[in-house]
Amino acid sequence: MFFIMFSDDDEIQEKRDLRNKRRILRKKADPFKLSDTAFLQCFRVTKPIFSFILEKIEPQLECIKSNGVSAKIKLAACLIFFGEGRYQHGTGQDFHVAMAQTTFSNTLRDLIPPLITLLGDWIQLNMTESERMEAKQYFFERSGISDVVMCVDGTHIRIVKPKYRPLRYINRKNYYSLNAMIVCDHKYRIRAADARFAGSHHDAYISSVSPIRKHFRDLHSSGITDKLLGDAGYPSEPWLITPNRNPDSGTQESIFNTFHARGRNIVERTIGILKSKFRCLLGADGRLNYSPKKCTNIINICCALHNICIENNIGWQQNLDEMFLFRND
Image (cartoon, rainbow, N blue to C red):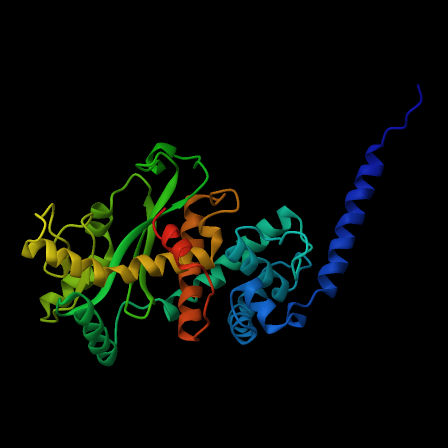
């Protein structure tokens, strides 16, 4: 029998050649050569918004040791990951990032801190007076409840089994998750996101310890009667209006619940849009394969990107029934 085995030197050379090939492909890659439609489908943002984000984060990346990947390609890889749940498209897609898994992991690590700086500009719980009046009119027309400016709901984001205290992260559906508290307004903008909590925590507990509760409590203490709509998983408070529990059909309480649900529906749709646009929140293999802390940061970044899209009228074509399925997995 005659056969030839690869030597260690051959394997090392093969890896070196592959790295060089990827480096050459990255240097030649230019996402801006895509059509506007293909660009939006690929990165979930328009070319001007991509450039805006790049301009914001590039100075912070200059102080990070380079791994031979430009800031543009780093951002492209991360936006593909946020949108698809994987950093590389499948065969036949318009733009392919020539990057090894370890390189992408380092890229994501490098980009999370500068992308987090977007949160303060794009996720704002405070409203202007005109925004408050517009929101109150919207919710009153749909629910008949006065002074409502926002809605709140929780949604579970699947994650890989954490190394530390994993049982805390198993939710009522028996999978590992973070329970993210999402607050939105009448225009599908996410006004607050609190994704720090393990999946075993209930919505009521998260609400009780979240800074969001303190914000509305302080408003009421100062005489501002702004309210939230929340489902039955939340405790009823002066600033948090929840449905009546188990009302008899045809009663005033039952009718109230119908109108309450009509007003609250927008937060379910907002979560559906968020998850359908940024499918990393669904996970390419059904989960985010990172530590809970990094997953929290990824969720927050996706919320900021969602708001950037809303503010710039960047639509997202998606089956509405599919969005509804994604709202609270």
